[in-house]
Length: 64
Image 1 (spheres, rainbow, N blue to C red):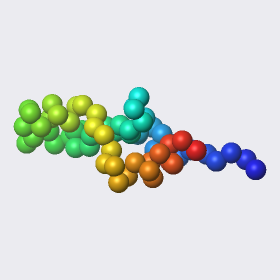
Image 2 (image 1 turned 90 degrees about the vertical axis):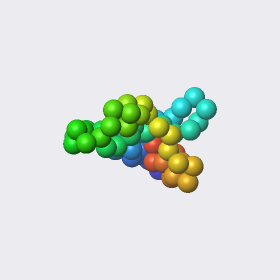
Image 3 (image 1 turned 180 degrees about the vertical axis):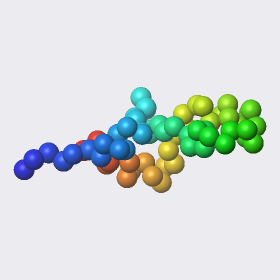
């Protein structure tokens, strides 16, 4: 049997942290930025963690 392929789109968007959680970049930071506050835009720059409910599914997608 051939190996299972990882989902390439997911592999480019998510990555594992040292402790095994999954890190993601935040959405809503590309355009229409004038109406968003400086505080909100600053928080969107930093990567966030994926919700625990989605972790199992994403772990399967990025590491097959």
